[in-house]
Image (cartoon, rainbow, N blue to C red):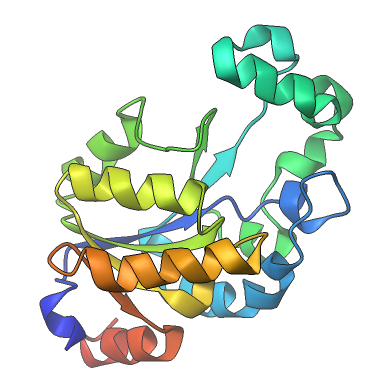
Length: 201
């Protein structure tokens, strides 16, 4: 039962639902649009508890070091000096929930490195997180693993996450489902919405 996996002190972290990945850019992910209605349903019921993360590229590759510099040298069109600013924004159907939803920006896959997100959640007494968004095998993975390392109980609605490659998306869902049973539970959007209704949210 999900009641054992999500206490009443929860937040919803929605990962990188940005126009950068929704529109026809070098990082376009077709699956984003397909799961967008599921995420909208979650956010509509949890906006005051929702935190959107945004992945922000540097102005130029030279602003980054090491592997990140090489990464952006591979994707020279995906730095901010080459991108329309609105591509960094949340997709419009989700941006309308801000506020009361909040936005945390990040420069890497993980939203936890600066400590700002963790401090904000802890200051609000949050002990469980629902994680949605993309990509299943990159930024969602980093968000999940960081949350587990920091001691949060994680709930992952499998029909509200997306990836750019079906094989790795499916493989990661299998790992999430089978590998972290004590710290992570997988579910679907309807079951989660029913739990929130049962809890009076």
